[in-house]
Length: 151
Image 1 (cartoon, rainbow, N blue to C red):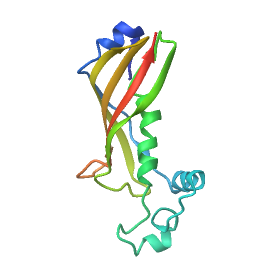
Image 2: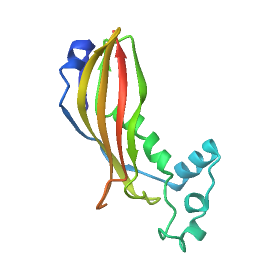
Image 3: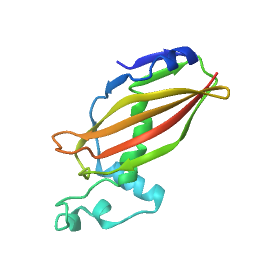
């Protein structure tokens, strides 16, 4: 169940909050292929299961940027925001991909609100997101993201 925040004051109160973890999401070859089509990145380690069997990972893997892009919809499963006029993804401070996501693996998102600070017309949230792989020893992605929410 996501945490709900209504308005700027409730967003400010989230500083330091662990938002928990989402449910697991399976990464299918169809999703990887669709991302390859959308980004024109058809490298064989992602899109050629037969060749990838003999590659460095033993199977096809998701694009790192696919894993990163899934933070956006998964974040909505951790935190629901209402009572603001607009929310925008303001950017990233740091992103790392410590381990690959094999096609067929399940991932989930963990999130922590590091800080919330006042900006003109609203607040800016700094969050640390960790994409975990089911059974993985290391996270698939760790990203420090910035979102802005306007009154």
